[in-house]
Image (cartoon, rainbow, N blue to C red; front, side, top):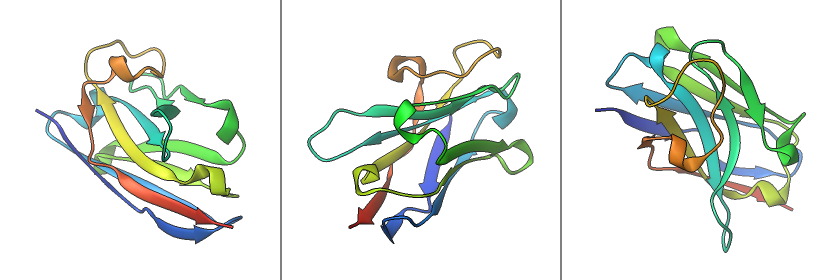
Length: 127
């Protein structure tokens, strides 16, 4: 089985930056599609960014394009979410997710496509 451990969340002022990390324990990291989701207070969990394992294809929700970059370092079994120009509406619990169920060609954006989840790391962006 796979365990995912997120870190890097915290309190930051609007306009600031954070880099979230997700360490995967278990199966070979290079075979996981990885994604980041977030859930803000009173809202449903939403897709933020994803990266495939086979091609490195990435995708983002429109609200973070240009401000957020997902990447992975297979040698370190780690995925990252670099977030810049943070806004108060980015405040949420951020969850790392991994998928071992699908092919390698594209990133995955649906919650049901992921079968492993981290515990979450909180990001708070102050006004």
